[in-house]
Amino acid sequence: MKLRALFILPLAVVLLSACSQGRNEAASYRHAIFHVIAWHFGTLGAMAKGEQPFDQATFEKKANILAELSTLPWEGFQPDSAEGSDAKPAIWENRADFDSKAETFQNEARTLARLAGEGDQQAMFSQVGEVGKACKACHQEYRKD
Ligand code: ASC
Image (cartoon, rainbow, N blue to C red; front, side):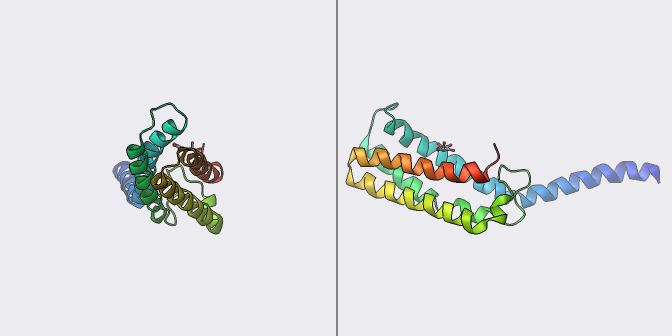
């Protein structure tokens, strides 16, 4: 009996962690999207701060990519997918607030893409700040440190 437990316990641990990995496909999905978002937003931020030379075509392209990407992570916030991720359970306790912050981020990203198309540098750079604020608003409340 003892010997059997010796084999069954580790097996149970492996199976359970495989299950939770499966469940956290949702977390992996949203994490991947946020990673790509951070990559493109990083360039936009660097241009807005003068840390990287401004290039209209690059800015516009990345602003458009960002607007598209901003719509993608949310389906990854499925119920019971907080575990093992940076997402706080508060997301699922305050879902309406979380959704409205997600909506704000998408709106700000869309505005940035529109402004990028219009080519007014000052407006574009200041809108990068608004997008950053929208990132931060959600991270402060709903992402673990
Ligand atoms: C990023 C990034 C964030 C946000 C945030 C904006 O590029 O990875 O989490 O911008 O810093 O305030």
